[in-house]
Length: 472
Image 1 (cartoon, rainbow, N blue to C red):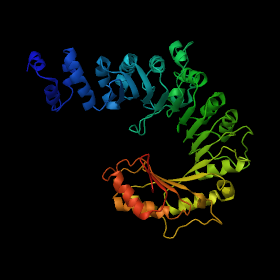
Image 2: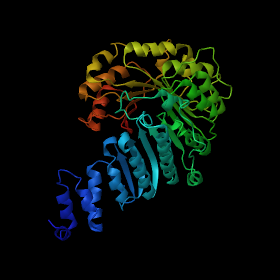
Image 3: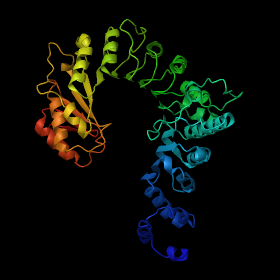
Image 4: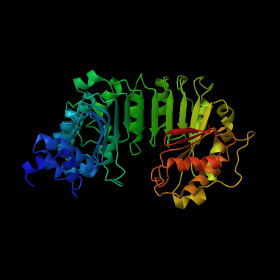
């Protein structure tokens, strides 16, 4: 059909025809033929590729996976993009990284604004390049990041893709950043005046070592020192202890309220020094860290304003022990548990010497992962398991949270209900049972789960996918 013939058809019929294309790619060149086809074919192409979700005429979500960076070219031509509520892009392939980051920057420049931005890099991003290309690519990344901040971004995340297991990593260049063969140029790109002028970033999530490689470290340090960050999350399992110590000794953020440090080889003394310089912290999440010795003390200024703590049992016990007295604002803890009866009993034993302090808190949450189908038989609690007031710290658990993070196989509803009911029965003071995002459990509805749990649980509130269902 000629273009004139296409344009003689009403929009509704064109949408119907285009929706039946087996391969959505021809919609992209079609969208370049005229303005009318642009506004019909291009949104459909972007939606069919899964990178674009129109939330409203002026707001969208844009998510570009590693194999889809070619769609950046199409996004640059879009005349209908407004503000991005979420903008996510993954940069992996060495052959296209330079062009991809340039297209990403041009895409950001045409957006009216970006609220939340996520950039995902292969851990070996800089390893395939010569020294000169590493610095050039690093400068390109910094320029793109400045453009993001100039678009009023409030939350920025650096991530590492789970899709790249066992990536080839140069520990000298990627993690330590102090290799003799890498000579830092006399000047490196830092924050742009436009980014500094906006200063709207309040959340920074460093879930990759990339921000602290030599090419980006100046920029990252400037962000940490220049923006009114209220939330900081660090998750860098491969970073060297010395580098982490340097980072934590340099950072000071007067506005910081929420700190998360996960799976990071940070010495307790470095973390404690940081906590001592940030007495205004209200929310603290520690997971898979080195546990300090019982003799090691916190600085007297640390955690004076603490409201909520998330940690594994041993770290929870340590902090409750050294916080003397407990801050008057301290109201809740979330204890990160494991699968089996033995794990939970070990957690109870670790917390035994601080049980009187646990009893003072208004909300005690125990988090338990839901295993795959094959793990259910061994993960269910022993019959008759119950925590007694006279001897147990977990007797005071008021909230039980079940998470589905590693559960990829759908579980029959009756097995899920049985698992939740058996664990719930062990806690006499239980008031709330929460099931996190159900993930791959879509085979049954929320209503099915709520009705099933109501029949086997006597609790005040059920929370499912963030929705609360009271008993009334």
